[in-house]
Image (tube, rainbow, N blue to C red; front, side, top):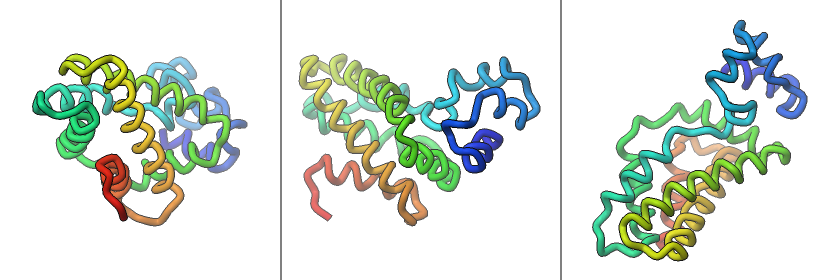
Length: 172
């Protein structure tokens, strides 16, 4: 990951190849692809979908879908060690400033939305309500994280808290 981030900074995302990343890291291209499914996965992939989905399934059954999604995100976030904010900011800043990565972000977001919607449906929400709540949750998180990436606040949790505050209907 460090080799990729260095090259993205030096050459830009679009002109950096997986082969160049592998060479910089001192590994083969095959080894690179064992760790990352694609070049954009270096920036976009995250391990949180299963954690969020499981946390949503554990929410009280009487919660509406959006409230269950919010509660699941809160529980999942509080249950993992916070990632290094500087590295996350560096990755997200590249995403926010690289138009060609919007498709990769959308694909990753669709996977997260599906995981959330499936968890909400498993709790008894209708398919439509589950998809709407999942989309709102992921959209709010993405917007807050990309805004945070281009800002100066040192805490990643601030972005997550901002997204959840808005989803709950709170004002700044």
